[in-house]
Image (tube, rainbow, N blue to C red; front, side, top):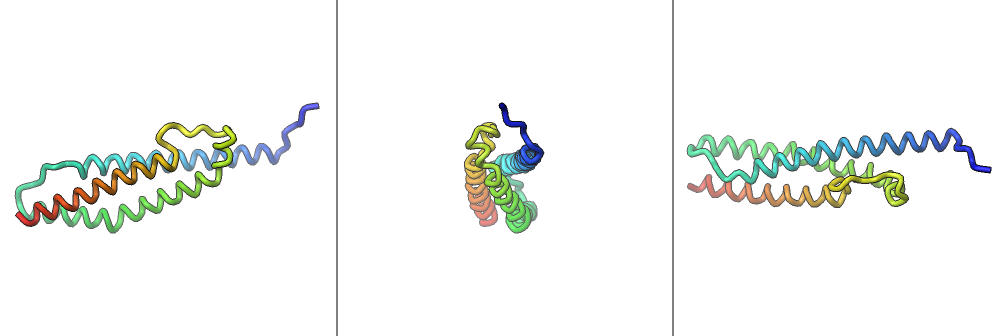
Length: 129
């Protein structure tokens, strides 16, 4: 005789769905944010005046001091959420779309860090002119 799923199984399935949805939404926003800043920081055209370069520099520092740590916290939180349902992924209960695995998020984060370092270097060069 087949086993009738009990209420506990339904609760677990619902919790899994909620955790997956939270992860998916968090990673979607994070990836959009990363890609937006990679494109922004890869921009090679700078304003001509020292004052405008100084404004860009201040905006860049604010980004590094406030936005970046907050998004890094989101990235770390996404890893924790993923680990809470990783066994369901391995069991085939949850399908992770391409680009949404924590390893993929880390690769994008690495691209962002490269763009940040290059942007900082270019801004310093512009300051020295």
